[in-house]
Image (cartoon, rainbow, N blue to C red):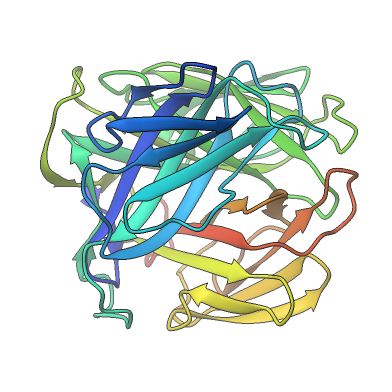
Length: 333
């Protein structure tokens, strides 16, 4: 049974795209949300939205194929009312052309306080949207989301997750490593029924590692756009929270200050404590503005520790976008 993904803010919308950043950039999937794409420089694109934001939220960017091993995505520029920016870089931090996934969360209402607990549906503009959330262990098991995967195969630090219920067409995948030292996760293949993720050490060497993953897909075969549809999740009582950490100088929450408290633990190291705890460990996906970002340790029902790293592997202050998919029921159905 599917349940609607809820968010305690009014008008939460997830827009998604698969983009190519080559000399002639394209929106391969998601043109209904982002009808215009402009290439700013190698690996960097601006996506103009079909419908303007009322209140900008966060952006996630995930390196896909043709981005060098150990590459990563950033959002480069805070989202505006009309546009979303994403940049894909190689391990050294230089723009790298290829394919990448972009997820933009915004709100169609300017009200910034919580409207109520779980009362608002999160929508997507395409037919039959469905989201699955996973924690994949270094050993190759779905530690969270196992009811939604028929298998997780691992070979040379490459993880293939096969879904229990396939989508109607290819999905979009976003990953975040879980480790105190710098790591990387690159999506290398997607289909309607599976996805493959490669894990790397800070030296861009293949290395087994835990990671969080969300998979957004559609149970319709054609990309048809129209009225906003509630995103469905196959777990009980799903709840989404979103945060934008301003990490330079005096750290603060630019988005989500009514939903969590922030502690700056030092250079590139930030802790969030949810104002409303989840019933169990949530899935946390992060993207930084200029650098790599990841979870420095596994999330808990009450909070998470996230961080950012510069191109040479050292901790670096940065702005970080955080998307949380959690549950207000302790058992996984």
